[in-house]
Image 1 (tube, rainbow, N blue to C red):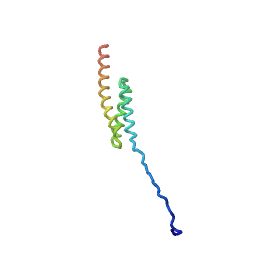
Image 2: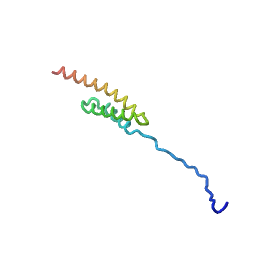
Image 3: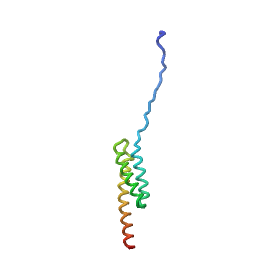
Image 4: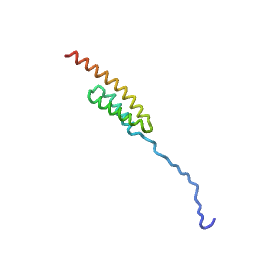
Length: 97
């Protein structure tokens, strides 16, 4: 070897990229789950349902879409529950009057 050449040992370089995340989809999923648990609370259930639905829909535009899709499905299920709970409450209160 000449003076200008240097010996470089063999090295393995591992480059890892962070896993992509979807914060809006995750937030929509969490809000939808909380709305599922609290759907019997009249105003809070509707607010959480709406926030979960909006965040899940916006989260569908980003990758990964798994939690955004799950939040959307749960939000649609919560909508059915909210309608049933509201109907039951109206039926009970109409019998009292």
